[in-house]
Picture (cartoon, rainbow over the protein chains, first blue to last red):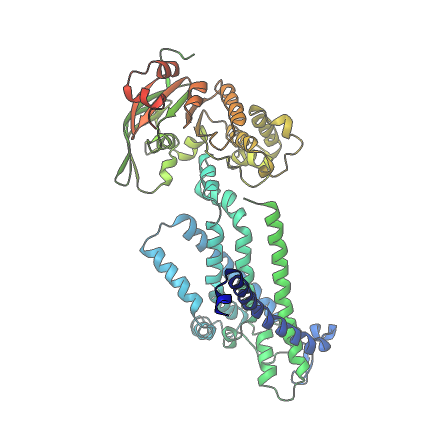
Length: 286
Length: 257
């Protein structure tokens, strides 16, 4: 028996089995979660569910305003966070030298990524809702979510920029390009797939988080569409929370249906990004 | 093969000292490079060949902690003077790198990169520029039907030619070549050398090479560097047949290096 364990070929098999099982365990919860949601939620999916207002205290009708609200929030988040995140990634990767300031910025980014989302919610409440007097609104919610996803975007963009070979920059400079021309034409196009990955990751997070929007935008029950960025809005994750814990006698299918729509939206966004990334990867290789 | 007198040197390097931080990479180098000739810079690794080359288009500026003392004059103008426009300098003094390094985009876009950045031409004229540049490196006939293919689909030699075409498209005066054949096989190397002989009719070429036969075959003048110092500079024939310094002879006969 002991001799068997010392046999390198046997060891090989054991190690392989272990690693494989560990990987398998990652897949299991994903599959189970999706299977559960689809099995329980698909029965309520209908055109009406997707496009109608909720009725009877959210116990019937559709979830249209929540879908619209989440779409607005995601769009608003990206409008705020993408430019700032990408610009600061460009600054950190292409312009700045490593010194005390950039180290401080890096530290801030790491810490920002580790802050619990409910703290962002309180921060958004304090800064955007109360101090800047935006009130509970799409604007305040988008800004809060934007601050939350900034580290993801900065880190992903920066890694994407730094993975562009140094020779591209050298060649561009040697042809007489300025620094900005070099970034614009020789670096950014080749970093785009990586930047896109960061954008999608942050999009998924912004769509799914409840805590940051809790105090800054989310409406408990608002059976109409927001008219401006200063309006409150319903949002899918918060709606799900409300259905599950705050409203008595809701059909379970309704909760699972809402979850299915949320997961579906995120999956679709991921797929679109994967397709775009694949397209770039085919076109640009080095 | 080369003119005995040097009436009007294209590039004058005067008492150049270059430091990377505290390390002195070039020591009091003085050298005149004539127009429309091929000048080869040879010497063992770490002797400052590439550093000198990168002085001539100020690519060393990209390395932080680099300090240059002395003067480098191109067409009588000091390129390290504060008023010098780096963009203009690098347009005029182009560089070919050790490894072929086309951008991973189409052949056409590679050649058009410089012209479009410098707004040299409208979109329509750009295809003329691309045709002329590719013709200058003998790629036009073989590639004219696949200009939209990725530059990475080309062979190593074709890629290096493409890089030279990309340079020629911005109409420089001087071509700096940093071991342009070190990643190529002997046949490709010979053909790139043939291209250099063609190009030298229009351009001043400075080439850094590890390959002494290459320097002997292709250059008009040779500068031998050792540990940051210029040991000897003269017509290629003279350097390779009767060098005046013992160190040069030791190096070119392969006794060391």
